[in-house]
Image: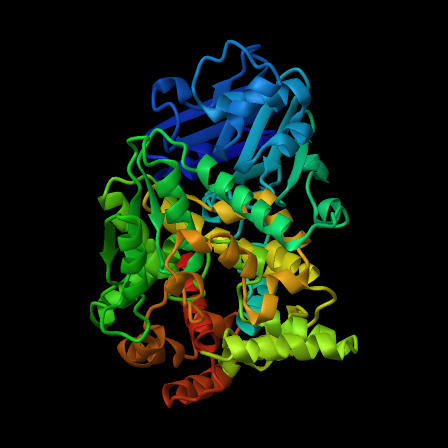
Length: 617
């Protein structure tokens, strides 16, 4: 896990490269490296911030040159199957123990497109090939590792974090109204290549592309997808339930195992739910003789209704492991307010909830415990239908298709298991019922807003893919990256292994939602590894915190002070309707069940980010 900066322009680029590098220095505190070269009228600059995970010696430093001297790479991420790739492709005389060197040599040998298809991992890669006079780019299948770019008057610039690109004089600090509209009306972020800054885009996941160094103003060319839904969803095999469960067990186990390899301490973010508990159980079993002890971290809320400590300690006791826990103390009005602003400063945009803040503090705890790599359970809900919306959408689909008996069977299972109706919230579910907060938008955001069809479903797998590609996974990856890198920690997500995603989407809906259970394949496949009370939980909440209490009481005066001001940025930029917001916040504070937390938190969070943007040098 590192940071990268790249500039290719028909003018000197050193000043920008150094400035952007300083802005994201926290991403790689272990070492730094630079590469500058002029080719004809074009100037190329590369910068790398290293967080050393494999081969901690100076041999792993970047930018790294290939054996031939023909290519130079800067790389952010991990290629988990690098050792098997080195063997498979006969990469010999390797000088380091890093995945970076394997990636570079393989790209030079078979090209960046085919190499990307072979990689299993998370990455954003930039390679300068002298022989072809091109800069090549690649980003991992699910966009775990960020890569932003912008066109300038003289070429293009790239960086791991959006704010780093603001160090370029050609790029203006103008908020993107399309992004704002989606965020405010439907609580969506990172759904496509739009960033929070107009003119800055995200390089697409699962894609490669290049720039011709001789003509940098022509921009990115030949952007190609090397992995897509249609590539695998039509290749379904007829298998029985036991075969699917066996493959679930073996695939998930291997996805966890390959992510435990590191030359630094590894830990697990344990929430007390199924996904992180599976990771903890597999990690303990796979590495009990390795001498590399598994470390557990958790956020708890003793005495609060959201507290998960009962299940956290139940799993820890079952596995015979200690767990490091912390409680997020609101610290009074100013303490929580300043912490919120600190997280927004790191997030490259507004926060969606206090879960982001909780994760930030969890990463701080990992750093204090000297744990550099942390595994999380992100992706399991999307791959195996863990969210409560999936049974409801599938029930809707069956009724629409007049499959009444199948609908009755699923509905009966939902009622019997209690997996959906417990903790059901209309204010949260309304966006999946075709409702949005478009009336909260100001004139500029309303003009740009195009509602995503969150309530529509063709097949269950199609709907899962939309969450993986657009609606859910991209932002989860975004905030986990920013909050972890703020503390120079690397996060790995075994359930976002592309093999796990493909397996989950290929499974029949009747298995994923068997007799009303969400994530049935995961529950059943790992039932023998965990306490039954954890395996068959119905009320899993994730890293929950008392955010409603904080917004209604601790932060209420701060919200009103900021959002009552007609000169607030969200109003003067035409993003939020002031009277509608204040009316909604008043209803929320009165305990209205029709106003969701994000309905009132999102505009407040956006205002804090816009103020931060205004003061960004």
